[in-house]
Amino acid sequence: MFRRAAINAAYGSAKSFFSSLKNYKDKKAKVEARGKKYKQRPPVPPREWNKNTVFYTGMIKSMDDDTVMLKLYTGKSWVWLKFRHTGRTFPDGWNVCSPQAIIYKNRLELHFPVEKNIKLIKIAKQLRQNPDLKVCAVDLNMDSNHAVCVILSSDGTQGKVKFIHGNKPLQARRKRLLGKIAVKRSQYNGILEEDDNIALWKKIRDIEDYESHRVSRRIVEFAIENNAAVIVFENLKNLKPAKGKYSKRSNTKRAYWLKGKIQNFTRYKALEHNILISLVSPRNTSRNCYYCVEQVFRYNDTPTGHTVGAPLFLCPNGHKGNADVNASWNIGKKFFLKHSKPGKKLPGVTVLQAANQAIEQPEHSNGPVALPDSSVGQYGPNEVAATPQMLRDTPTHGLA
Ligand SMILES: [Zn+2]
Image (cartoon, rainbow, N blue to C red):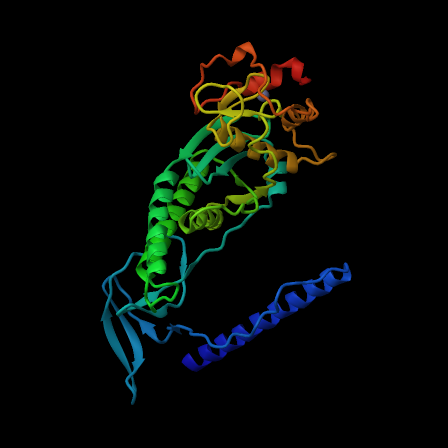
């Protein structure tokens, strides 16, 4: 059994290398056919690898809540040995596969992979079958909140809004830890001891893992509670490199990575509940008003001029509210517009489409504009001014 596992592992490793080599060659040929230079380096075969021992059927038996029997080699013969174990119970409805023995610190762990078959229906098909399909649109932030989630239907009906907080404390904590690492680095004059800073890096990774799991879990729970069939994110924009000290630059970079991590964790957590992930273009999601597509101004307390990154927004037509919530509505809208092609239009999507076409992206001056009367503050930061009914009923926007 073990010998066969080793052969399988070697075969798999080689196969994976040759397929990535083939991908590389294909991509290179494609780029060079366009007359450009391909700068990526070719993949290298694995120089060494470690595989964990798998206990197949016949090597493991009599597993109960406290003990398990494992067949082990003593150096002379094979014997069955009884081990005590602690661990969580297996989740219901999952198939338990053969465990792997993993050495972790000073103990041996048996890791059981679990698997489950799920039937997924393509988003386009789901939309055809269910015109009232709801999505959960998520705006992931680098500052203030981790995420703002909203529920949106294809006819523009707005559902609940949820803020997932905790990004600010994370940023502060991580920056402090990165600062410590920077100080240690300077003390060693760039030459590091073997295990220097290992504990600090581990702390940073642990905090990030914990937060990614927490945030992704909350997003999925919110989607389930509100019967959303799809979770919509924006494609991550290119990272703008930050200037300043090591701790600041590094902190921004890791905040950006965290967004990707949250997306990945959300993807697999959502799959278990038959919820799919869709990505839309990040273009203008924070820049335009959800209701009328005019360019918005952002402000802190009083709406005077535009402050970059401020929490509130106001558009020239008087729609106002939380800027991150506005971005989330826009992400949801983009999803429906993306899936509504001419000839195969979604029943309700015309409302969203009309709102988008009503205004042909006018040229804007950079200076502050005169604010309409309706902008007198009566909405909190978490509310938005217009209702979907307004969106449908306002003739000035060209909506029927
Ligand atoms: Zn507006």
